Length: 618
Image (cartoon, rainbow, N blue to C red; front, side, top):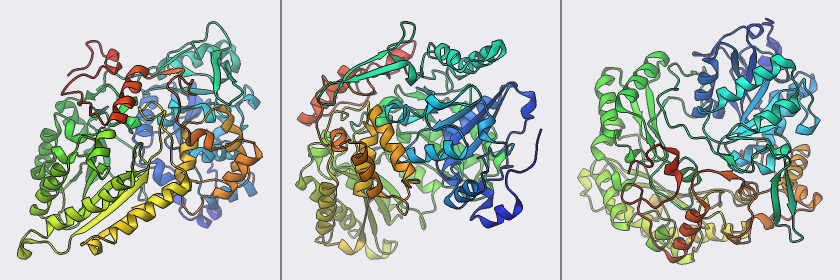
């Protein structure tokens, strides 16, 4: 095994954060690459601090390294300083564990978490000296495989990937690796492996499918090229969440975005918010048992030395074990002063008693996500919150000692009117006013309300996948309108407003619902200097605009038009369990402003329960 570092000390000392590239973190797995059959490099196409915070990679890293025949290593996008050095010195991108070139691995697995990381994928490939286009790779090159939420519409990236894994990694990955090992032993052929891999449920090999288009640009037909290749890709769902979970997660030496232990308490969501892709693609709800959660929490905190643990899920309040696990952690680790982070709490299920025990009230803020300002629009998106519930929750928090509140909303939602936007400002003002009804001697200083608005991006496999999206100019107009209304409120000095970038959100919308023709646009944008698009200081909208024009593609085709529910969508070949008829029904209910009860109140027949032997547990 060659242990020579890929970078000299001089180079490491010339970059901003050398610790991003040297590995050797607590929990890092060490194996001899010469004594394994399969080498898998796991990639998160963003800077180290972001990628190290991703739970999915931690789970797969542990899962793959449990196999004696497999060595899983990691790579992240080099920051711009090291990017330049690698290019100037013709140094191939390397994995953290062995410091060996990524191009020498059997697999390069890339997590597709966010559309605005797409150009970073091409950076990873080019710096690794792997041909960017899958068609140009020979048998000596790694199989490039993508997975994660953006893989639920893989088409804009299909020219760059050999394989996409659709679903949760704990299911058929071992079968996939076993197939590779078998074919490698018999005499490896890239084409033979891909053809056989396509027969495994959940595996999508884009080169084995053909797409034709109508004169108006809509998809005419999507079909496999061979009879033994499936026409539908079935999303893989882990029915047993208590088989794989890292006991000793990786602990970085530098501060990362989520610098804490993360315990996934459940997967899926019962709420059915119509804008939320995660709430659909991770159905059905599956909870981990209390004993399992206790054991995993103890193992992780003991092995890492972390002083904080996050209880992760899409809606923590809906976990039946939430209070029991929180009280266990409080009692078990009270002497070590372990802080407990509880994201995704719903305001209508808010437990002030729990929150007061796990947060330092003096420095913490509470986060509420009404998503829309008016009751009418909250009904449209199926949020299921009333103004009374929101104000009551805020008042309980204020009486409990909090004086900082973060409010998350969306602009550009389907059926939105300017009156709905004005209600955001009024709701923020009403919450601030509630605070000042408390006697002055009992207040904790001045109230601080932070209003943040993301810009609505329709996503595949949601009831709004057919909806039109606002233009950048419309988003900007709405942001300015809301800012003006906030400045008219009685408590406007207590309200701060933050918002996403309009042009960036529109580009995200194009890529989210795009088809195969966008691969050439992504390539052109990258080759002309686009990288780290998710970082505002690097986003270059002019280059993206030129990439669309050069390739004669109109981005508004993917964003501004409302789609017919009869249209063939680029991702229709994927079966996520949730049925198309359910999504159509929810879209129609949204137009009427009709609420659909959550899964515990009444089964809405979405279809996802078929993944479980006895159907949904509600």
